[in-house]
Image (cartoon, rainbow over all chains, first blue to last red; front, top):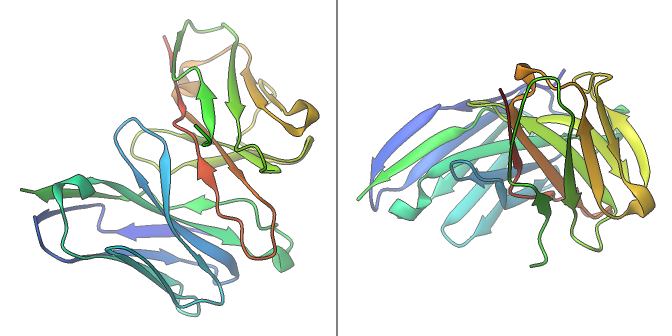
Amino acid sequence: KQEVTQIPAALSVPEGENLVLNCSFTDSAIYNLQWFRQDPGKGLTSLLLIQSSQREQTSGRLNASLDKSSGRSTLYIAASQPGDSATYLCAVSPNSYSGAGSYQLTFGKGTKLSVIP
Amino acid sequence: DTGVSQDPRHKITKRGQNVTFRCDPISEHNRLYWYRQTLGQGPEFLTYFQNEAQLEKSRLLSDRFSAERPKGSFSTLEIQRTEQGDSAMYLCASSLKTTGGTEAFFGQGTRLTVV
């Protein structure tokens, strides 16, 4: 059974600092990995999608990397801003060739980020 | 608004009552998913539709839960005889089946409180 772990559970940084959020998964047979942002009481906003064949994806101040063989992904946020304060979730989709299908996402519990002005 | 839409946003119900939630996916998306999220946890998969066919159900989806997606458009999730343990955020997501990937887009969720 796939398990996804996110460390740390919470992180507080001063505005302007660069930071890294970590995600690890136990089964490397993944189809893709997706990073989401969730504001309190809200739904999920997709940030970045990395295919299993890719090493990284970038969007603005965000950069996500994937090392499938070691079961790890990182989300790098440059020049953090108070508006970045939210919970960040990573989720993996299983490889369809494993028989589990490529549609079911397994999520970590998230990292709650606070950026202090 | 062309995103995933869920209704209602909040629902308070008494234990034992039935509730129904609606999800309208992004119009061209043929895949639709329901997830449940409790406080401090990541979302957990409940069920998946490809067009109108329900192809996968989690063991979390007890007999009191039923989901439909008539005509492959909107979907409904019904919970019968609600229990306090059903209190959670119910999230709907949709995606487009392609060979390039299955990026999922989520709605704002329906917050259910069973009292």
